Amino acid sequence: MTTTFNRRALLQTSVLGGIALTAGLAPAQAQAVTVRMSAPMTPTDMRAVALEEIFAPAIKGFATYQPHYNATLFKQGTELEAIARGNLDMSITSAQELATLIPAWSIFTAGYLLRDAEHQKKVFASDVVKDLYKATEEKLGVKLLAVMYLGRRQLNLRGTKEIKTPADLAGIKLRMPGTEAWLFLGTALGANPLPVAFTEVYTALQSGAIDGQDNPLPTNRDSKFYEVTQQIVLTSHLVDMNFIAFSKKVWDKMTPDQQKTLQKAADDAAELGRQRQLKLEKDLEEFFKSQGLKVYTPDVESFRKTVQKAYLESKFAKDWPAGMIDKINAIQ
Ligand code: KDO
Image 1 (tube, rainbow, N blue to C red):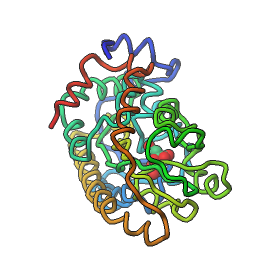
Image 2 (image 1 turned 135 degrees about the vertical axis):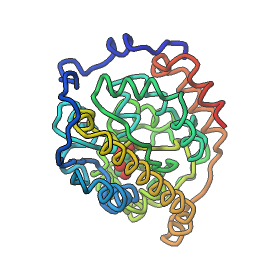
Image 3 (image 1 turned 180 degrees about the vertical axis):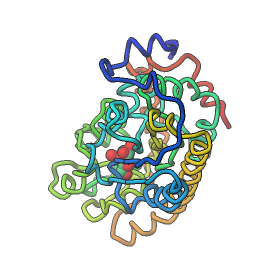
């Protein structure tokens, strides 16, 4: 936690060697562009809907939004490099994916750090994240336009074994997305993490290849994970988000007016998506119960203590900018 965060450290730790970045671009000029977006989310995910409802029409005068869902254009976790290489214009990325390229981002992969949706919004509107955003632009050629609230991640398991504390997860094969930071979250929770791409989770649950997965309630409903699981344990271990990641190269070719419109379109879509996810989170507990699932709250304090300790002692914490945890905690 005392490691300093500076550009040089980033240059040393980046694994992006050899990728062409965005230097030497032509001055801004107006031209029509197609914005190819690739993400693992479904077209019915609230964030996807908000982008189609708000973002696409707002930029229509100068850009065509072309979404590719269910990771059909790029595999989950490969989108940032695709943007950096100029093969993709936009994605909905995560701190866990950013952390594979810029290790300091792993601070936002820590369980029980952000308190709730409001805290998340304030943290990302504050100066605390400025250096991370800057480094992402400079190193990856990726502009993070807005934060899309995904929701509080909950455990969603097969079987009826009651989970009260992390010890109860011993030996449980918990699917996590396939990056190191995600897998560590599974370990910190006390489970046995297995990497599986989002698009394979339903089948893996159905076949019993995994015992469970973690995602926010809206995702569990949208991807129908409740059809192949028996319980939801309300650990709320990560107040999760995705970022609207946009190619700086494409951005730099836009006029200042177009940039302003695009930025506002992203902000508005993120806010609409956030409100809808929050409403769904409130309403869905009853829905899952009506589908026959057991939905209950474990000993959250026990999970919080175990997970926070695991992160503070982890190798990830060494990459966190000095004092940043305290600054995040201090934001009310
Ligand atoms: C997932 O794979 O569990 C995850 O929730 C990770 C998120 O970062 C994000 O990629 C999300 O999937 C997709 O947008 C699907 O909702």
